[in-house]
Length: 403
Image (cartoon, rainbow, N blue to C red; front, side, top):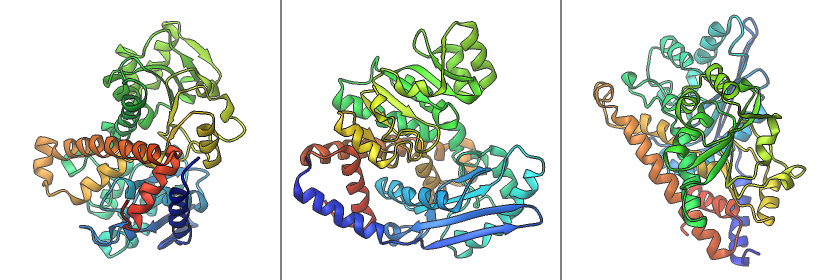
């Protein structure tokens, strides 16, 4: 049971956060091309005195079912994430309702970028520009920069254009792996030999597989619709199959799975594996109060945005399964974006030395590890769930309150 003073402060800060309304809501439509998209800046309070002033940043989600409400929820969470990480940008998110594989998508995307441009920071707006999220592809970066005539409209761009290439480098997955390793170091005797199940092996999950293995852990179960379900491996993920996953080569990954005799299972079974760490890296709300009782992992470290509902997070805690929430575990992409927007390294030097990539990775390692340790200490001090301690940490930083 959390102590009363902790709960009182958490509820006070939460009420203040809940009273906030988005600082910018922009809906974009071009009926001729079937374009519909949204830019939402939730809050920039935490960065009003920062190097960029009041500007919000988050990735760009592209799916056929994107809604304004979905982008609003993501922007709200991004506010917590960016504040918890102590970044120079507040919370924002953008989204486009489209199928990136459909005919005519390039023309529609270019139009979306053009219509959203007036909200951009470089034009005096509150929004830090386009980036990567579900549905993102390196081509989109090139289209946006070509359409708008600047490299500053997109974060995650190639190093030769002043970027950190954070999707290819897997910076977000690096952060999630560091979060898992930090929790294991503090609570389970270290990461060496500890097992993990990873749901989703796209840009985030593939990088988690790569970096968690480098840190000494063992990925023993993976799942993704592009490899036809979940697979329990007959040994720790390594070698050529790990390379294929890191490169998001799903065809080669599936060939390895079939040829090497790994055990195929229904897609959702990855969630119920008896492992040290469960890392959901797919979509939101996959773990709720109806299915959380089936979780057997020692800890859940959230790689996706909101993979657990808030009631499920608390139900898991009550069963003795802590949850390291997404806004603590996965800010790596936001950290890399902040580096791109604030670094003094020139494009020429970055192309030569990859200095921004190194800066983004080093900042991700240090920020995520320090925040996990701080959340653990806060939770221990007040006998509170990790998710509540994490929320209080972020809320204090949003409103510039001290501990």
